[in-house]
Image 1 (cartoon, rainbow, N blue to C red):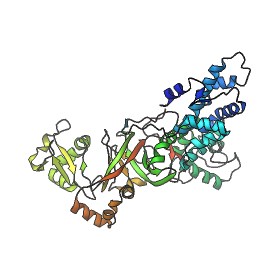
Image 2: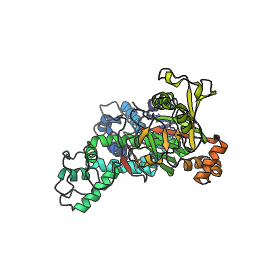
Image 3: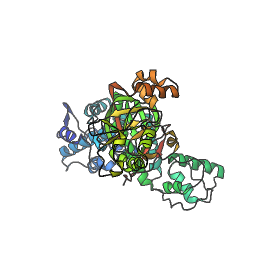
Image 4: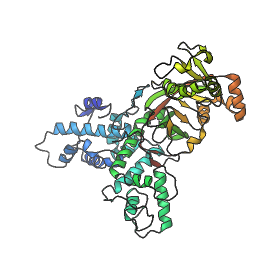
Length: 474
């Protein structure tokens, strides 16, 4: 599906005049040739040349006496505006299950930019002026160029886990992926081990230089699939560019299980996350973080309450609830005495209560929750179980997003939290018991994008390929 500007573009291109200025590609040979070169090089931008008046552009290089020149002018003008719009905004909208801010990028005037470039003789440099300037975007484009360079190279599957120069399929795949600069069948073992470590980093694996089954599986993924993943990510960064130029935004990527807080070309904060496991996936969405909650309650989702907590509560109700610091509420929110409830008679289909875990350092949400509207009951929050952040594949939650160092992120968004978080860990826990839940409305809402991209930047901005944990990439 073409992006949201297509109808607008078609209307603008119904004549040969844009904003009172006449464009004639057939008579302006220099501009036409530059446009043809840009279209021919569309793959370097992650685009398909055939999307941009491919047949018509070829015809303009030949005899046009018997052709409908007016129709050619219109089609080439349409293709030019479409091409530069795709460069600036991405080729199509990024699909999310819920869009709470109705985001449609429109910060640049493509038509005026095109006219000015033609008038100034700078059409060849227009793509560089329109595309994002972020270093992460540049890294994705560099990875795209490396893959495009050897995309037609025939690489047999890697079947051997031997890491030496006799493993020719391995050497060829490392060369195809751009991990090695040349195809050297006499490479020494130490050098090859270092290149394998680079491959392991590319696929977010333990960097020990060994050819394990998981690495072999990732290396054997066809380059065409990797190109698709990179192009999708490039499209997403173009789509995001307009909003992050205007204000700080939070971007969570589910396969990468990481979070970026950025504005313009600056990464203000980066951290690891824990996202939903395949059985309880995190849902892509767009929303606004509108408040920070310090020492939050955890209102246990009904499914977790009846499937996981209820069987344990039945064994020893008072002891289990006291140990977990849980309250039992009726449907009106009134706190009940657990001893008054006939727990053995309750089951998944008969549980007319709500469970709520009180605030504190042992709360499942930790000490901080970043609140935003979600129809899926999703949160960004702290966690008392920090060890899970050490895993490369961090897919453990029920759908919420646990954020490492969330207190640092929260303080950047709401400096008033510093007075509470500057205490020692024990002091913060004492404050939780003393103060209870505290809500800090943000003066300016922070847009939040929870996305699903297999190709995505790592902690230092280099491009990595993550597990398609929910099998969404076809």
